[in-house]
Length: 98
Length: 110
Length: 135
Image (cartoon, rainbow over all chains, first blue to last red; front, side, top):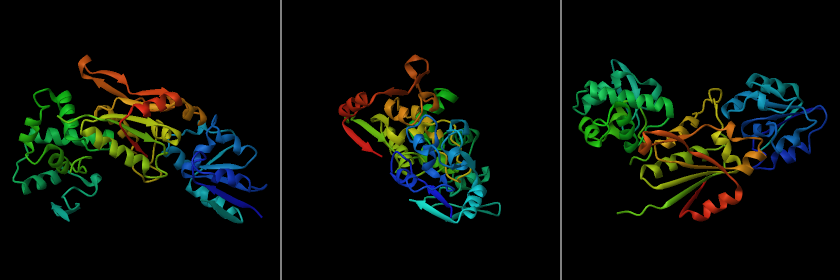
């Protein structure tokens, strides 16, 4: 069983990322979208929470917020909307941490 | 509401502002000014084009005070006065000129 | 003669995820159009509003980041960004837009609008204002 976890809220405003990472298992992927993408910025307080996880971020949401891919922590995959769909279909389930 | 320009229909809001700024073409200003019994001169167009450039750069329609100051800086102090702008656009340079330019009503105008 | 009050607008929300940032900017422009003494504060996620190079074409949303550059035209010259909020997010002032205002008394010399202040300094600024608007 594998799961795609979605987080769309800023890690500094809500606790959805904190809660979510406690439930991520091996083989799962965490996809950050909307204000959730801020968590993947290198040098940020939230980035430490992502270590050891398979993390993807949605490219259009990064661009909208002025975050270049060079500003992300290492090992993060940037996906477009098609990549989002691929992730959702590759995994057995999708869980959205609203 | 809507206006028709050369057979093309443009949606407007209840106050006559264009619904979609990207649809704008000069004919829109011509039709709108005709309805106000106003003939557009080069001086009018100078302001209309200036407003379009301002929106392009800042994504807002400037308040009258800001427009007046910016016009003065770009086109000379004699044009950067409310007297000059109100003479061109008697219904208010903010409201009327923005409407002709296809912009939304200036933020802060009532 | 009307009295001018010191208006403080506190921005704490990231852009695009919610409508707060854009609504705040519109309210600021309205207040400034009526020639009030306007100060803007960016704390917490609010500082994300000022990041440069925003491109919303992939979201089909209005990119309102260019509008911050118009603040100078509206005589909004005091924009404070909190140091602690920047650091927590791995950001520095270099990541933010360069916002300026023109000093008419000095032949339209461009002057910086943004100042980075500490949380304690920000608290003093809040204390010094007459009216606070929180977004």
